Length: 187
Image 1 (cartoon, helix red, strand yellow):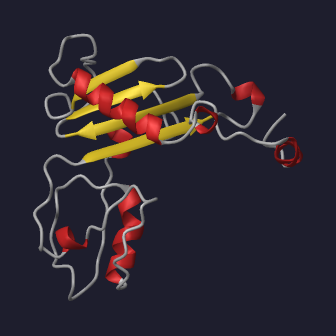
Image 2 (cartoon, helix red, strand yellow):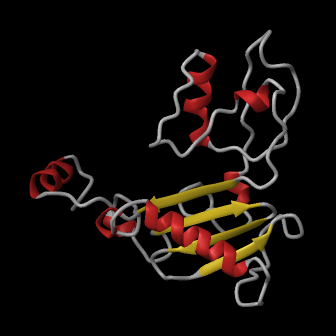
């Protein structure tokens, strides 16, 4: 991959996040391509809406894409899309600072901010002008920097108490830890 890693466990760059979502429902979804930001979290609300269940679940991050897919609404231009990665290799000998990842990202309009929760580092990219995300704009007084960082920090705070943050993982009791150890997930 363009940022030095093969695989999808350590980064939140567009080369890994920007993937097609393909949906087909003959007679309901007209053929075509919808160029709009969507998220994997949108799949469940969309499938349930097509099945006739239109209740909004407060716990869901995603939204139903039915209005977009059926042409009832135009794609939003300012939707916020978030992503996160929490990765620690199972095998202790593979664990190094470079291979452990606890990161969050927020994409809004044409800009994306990435926060490395392990190191506290931030990255900011204009994905239209720099689709390969090679020019980090953090610290350049970019007009979107403060707003994007603030939005991502708010999203991180809403994810739950510090004990359940991606950087720390869920708080586990002794019994759960022992079960994971016997299964080979912990040493």
